[in-house]
Image 1: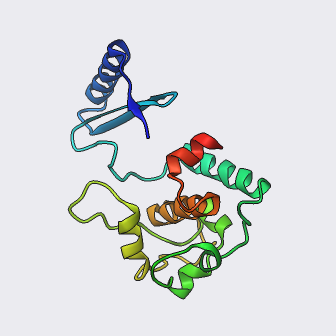
Image 2 (image 1 turned 135 degrees about the vertical axis):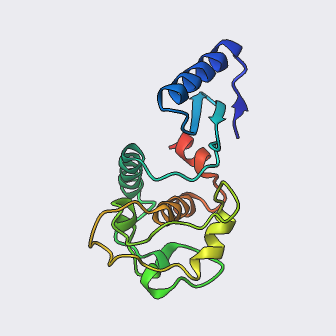
Length: 176
């Protein structure tokens, strides 16, 4: 849905900042995105790009919590609703996953673990649905707070469906 940023001065400055960061961090992989209005610029170094699966950062968790609160206020979601009650999937969810509530995903205490990206360097909704049938809990829900890429993927899909089955998640965020 986005156009590339066409301002060469902006893209050059972003590239220079990414190069500087990579040099200072000792050559680690780096991925960066800059958004301005409906224009976006992605750049990556090493094995990193805009599709690389990374652990969920604290700012992302806080943002998703605010988004869930906003959606609850707008009556799009009920934070105590279970996944099996709202998430429309091609296959039935395993009972342990289907009984999870939205707030457990938003607070990152779902007990779910990571996702399997195989040989790919990205994760798609199709891959999510393929893995839902066999996903297992690594911890008892609520037992501890931990990073969960599967929980994050389920949360974004849950919110997307609650908003509008045909909405792209990025468009949904922009609209709200």
